[in-house]
Image: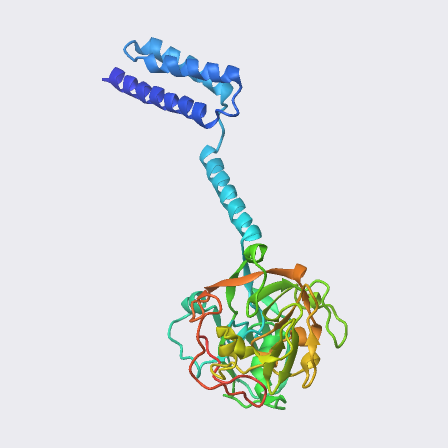
Length: 401
């Protein structure tokens, strides 16, 4: 009985070695030396005819063939771990290759393209009721709860430096009446959604007063098609991501790259165009033509939305280079960019033209959060409510959807 188990075990070992030898001959055919191939084929042939009837002789022959095999293919420790590591490295290489050559993830940091694309923004709980608990809310809508109710009467003692919770999320401590409150967002964002509505911070906050009660959304995350403009030129109304290298603010000459190396805006002016804004309506005189026409006369759906006065769309404000009455001619190989949120967009009205060489790609697909904007970028109709602008310049009824 013992001899039977030994023979059975030896058969399995011979079968496994044969599989390894033939596998190496196939997978490493292009890197094996001719002598190694001959030796492996010889081992394979002998294993093919090796029988286990004479156990002692078969065992000796198997050990001899295994020794010859390991001289060519040394045994590697942690082989399975190494193989999985190689798979992960290859997968990451492919992923980064796709990112570098085709799709690049991009996060919308500001509100300049709202309501088409949302940046980091605060939403009141009264506007959007809480339907799912955290962390599901965050996974679906990229939102973090922002709530602070005064526990002890007192004045604002300060907002402290931002720290990263879990090494990822920026949070800011704030002290009122010797009580510390932690809220999501950097110092500027917390100050904006906690105190901007007051314009002037009260000298004292009573117990029970609600500083904020809502969510901070971390903005839309989208893929940028880096290959789009390798085959066709940018066209009017495209949402474009571009580098700010070489661009400077008109007012103080500060480089835009000190604020952000990448910007996202809508292309409104082509090379050779003459632009002007009158009564919040953008007019364009195309190169070679003699008359201006309204941007809505181009029959482009994106501009029809912008002038719908619904869902937060509001037209374009005549400021900066396009102050009332001013005309701007777009140089060759340059483009003029505007944000859809005209009140809160630092765009070509303030810093000029974007050279063709600065353009990175076209906004393609919003992959997170899972709001109504999820999917192909820039194809959603406006939400059906009139655009109402509050006294502080913020668009009312701003929602997560």
